[in-house]
Amino acid sequence: RVSRRAQPGRRDARRRQRPGRGQRQHVAQGAAGPGSRGRAGAALRPGEAPGRAAQCAEAPGRAGPAHVSRPLRVRGPRCPAPCPAMARSLGAAPALCRAAAGLSRLPAALAPALGAQPPRRHYADKRIKVAKPVVEMDGDEMTRIIWEFIKEKLILPNVDVQLKYFDLGLPNRDQTDDQVTIDSALATQKYSVAVKCATITPDEARVEEFKLKKMWKSPNGTIRNILGGTVFREPIVCKNIPRLVPGWTKPITIGRHAHGDQYKATDFVVDRSGTFKMVFTPKDGSAVKEWEVYNFPGGGVGMGMYNTDESISGFAHSCFQYAIQKKLPLYLSTKNTILKAYDGRFKDIFQEIFDKHYKTEFDKLKIWYEHRLIDDMVAQVLKSSGGFAWACKNYDGDVQSDILAQGFGSLGLMTSVLVCPDGKTIEAEAAHGTVTRHYREHQKGRPTSTNPIASIFAWTRGLEHRGKLDSNPDLMTFAQTLEKVCVDTVESGAMTKDLAGCIHGLSNVKLNEHYVNTTDFLDAIKNNLDKALGKQ
Image (cartoon, rainbow, N blue to C red; front, side, top):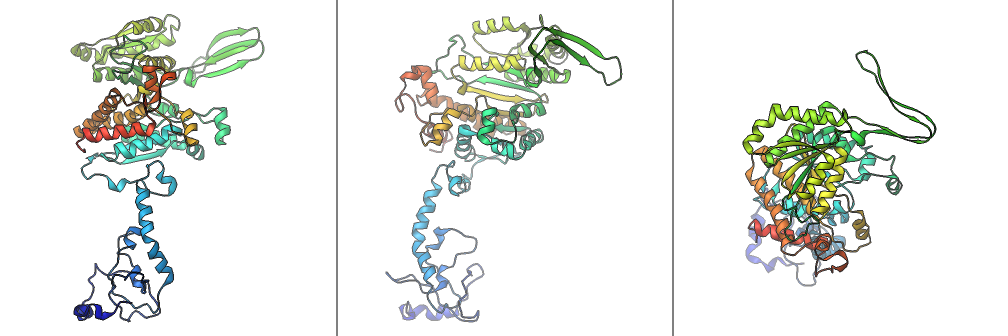
């Protein structure tokens, strides 16, 4: 107990003083009624236990153990006896403070698992303001972990943007019967810009692993069929990463038609002799058309596939607009000499749209459009130095984009952007998968060296496009700066194992000599970004 005589000059002043509205604090009520008089709190003497419940009060609007440990000056009702439970709480307060401070320093990917909130409240006041939202689609496995770091350490500390979040992780897709994927695509149509983390497309093994209700379709396929448009894949070129095709000194961008063909085909197994026919029944009641495909003498396989004039036209518009935006010549490749009707339709629609809508603009920019057979085009690509856009049908684009990625060094150095025919709506993502092998190592507590650059570029391409739509040059500059920082970091010698393997061979590289682990590489990018933005 602290004697009133310890502060004789203030006793009468305390009696006269009435706490202002902002000073009043909630006090635990003891047996004394609300009319009883209390005393001002005082700092405890060494070894003295707090004898008044009033000393446990917290200021209104504040929370957390960091504020409990301070001695508070409180006027309130007298508590008739010491509160042992409260004394123990106050005694533990410094430890709680240290625990809270330590938790706030945890990596963002680990903090939620321990019940902590991501440290978003500490962002700088001078973040770039973004007027309209961006759709965020979360993903699976190792890329999901990296995605969280990128968002919390590289993006949100510098950009004040509202994110419309959709969890496209496989468990949530299963829980929502894949409705979350549809909702994310519809939100992209509404807000025009989406950034997407890599996701799992389940097979039989994944159905068993995750105990899924069914084998859900590719989320990328679902999104592309709702949005339409074209997937453009472009390599990220680093000077010190050797290319398997040394002549490719300039990027080659592939535009993949993201609709129909083999990806929406009906295929089947034939187990006996019989006739395979295709039938078209017009809705206007006109004559049914029928084609005999093959007379099977025994077992075999069959397939029927399709595309639409509307989708092919949208593909053409997206490709021509992209070529104009990037100031690149454009090539379309098909096999119209074999598939005279099917591939011939692609060739004819492209030529018609080019002549009617884009030829004048191409001429002004001194770029060109040309159709080539796919086999001839592949040969020309290998002989070229790059510097053009290549429009491919769905299957061709799927295959050739991976060839280009490896030819330029690594699939981890490939961007992927879905551009819709309206020229306004895009969805940016990494071109690679969820890096399952690294995730298995991560689950065992082992460090990994996973390349995050393509995932970072998914964010930057989305934010740069948001900046273009909103006329926000600061946002565009930030996105371009972060991309340059990624390339400069690799060119300075800090890189992940896949890139070091391109230089030295995977069997020869050593940790911390030729490459660093995932978190160290991300930290290096963050430090270099802070320097580029003038934060250091």
